[in-house]
Image: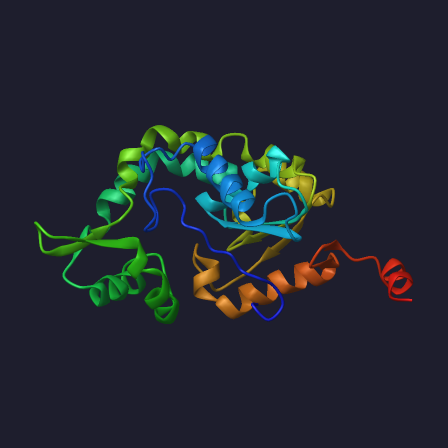
Length: 247
């Protein structure tokens, strides 16, 4: 993918090695402001053509950023396996899900092993890339624990997903929704998809982390999305105009 586009992967607040004055403030407003601030700091007032890509909770952040209409030269929105109806329904079970996962690991390798054997991932190679940065070493307990204490952020969960489908449909850019199963569509998205308001691709044989389970296929869908919508380095490329400028 990096042969065709620049890929920027930023730390979300409370999720990476960046620190803030309040790493537990995972409200959708704060996360959205963070992303906009990073893009503005990187590119100023003249950004290249930008496509936002977000998975799960990150998909919600990407939708909110796009809906704010504050990013100049935004031309695409890629949302990966997050749907308002499914997400809202699962929130009541979230604390139990978090409590039932392995909480600490004697080594990073053991955490990687668990993530594939008992956790959410299916690809050991991608787990070796993604899992280490999700952990931190606890000196007092002499083990690795999760960097992000999600169970302490419950008051923000509803805000991540409430009204998300309508917000997604209202974003004034080209959109694609990548799903691990058709059963995830809610009513608003089903109607929107029938009306052609966004492209939808269902990727079978994966879990929730599509971009990790089948990274090559995931990358190919993003490149096809860029090509299909004729998004070039500076925006949408109109063949007739390009030829005129070249002459």
